[in-house]
Image 1 (tube, protein in one colour):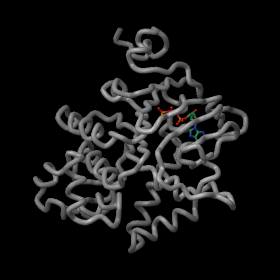
Image 2: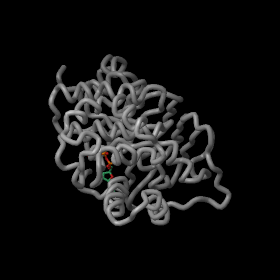
Image 3: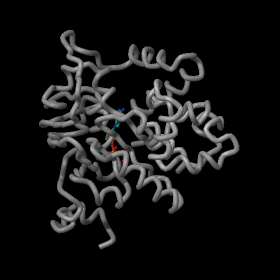
Length: 289
Ligand code: ATP
């Protein structure tokens, strides 16, 4: 459903517009904060020492009145687990992410983080526990250093470089004429799709979130860069609860749980091997058998 303007995309687009318009990036967050659709409860608590245990209990949600987008979705993601969301286009994968990050609130059922219902926690503390690596790596006009530092504005130059190394981005950056001072055009013009992803991974490494949300790229990327991305993602996800809208078999294979969605429902769940063995919908999706 990429033709729909998704909240995550909106947010990122606003980022870009605002970043070029406003001096301090901290202000961007303040401005975005005022502009969101869900509001905090009066008594909302601020999460601290987040472990990253997530539970969906019978969650149903519709964007519009007469059609249920997701139905009765239940799952538990334990601390540090990787959950892959797979299924055909329109199945509801992004919607689950939108609910988890509270761009929308579920109409029925409940979503929990570390035993708190997410409606009862402040959005600020919820979002602080999360970092996003999205298909379109939202890069802004500025240097590579600034773009990575956006993950944590207080990070030192050394920390930026460390993050780039972890993300397998350092070597390509060092080959650019101005290295970390290379100025990217809006949307990262001037570097390849795969390199943009490495930068957005570096940004997430620097953010050091407890929960990671990944929308895996569908575009084809050369094999070498693809391997670098997979390796960097492996490092980034280690020890974090990760939700991946997954398109790559490499990624799906190593998931602790695969949730197979169809028309808004979880049709099957399990590991790659379990799902193949049960010869159901997932097996069919994997077509090559
Ligand atoms: P894809 O693989 O194409 O990204 P998806 O599994 O992520 O698909 P969703 O984006 O969650 O699917 O969409 C689920 C359903 O909700 C689709 O029918 C889609 O058209 C609809 N939908 C998505 N976003 C909105 C929106 N903002 N307003 C109304 N309907 C929407």
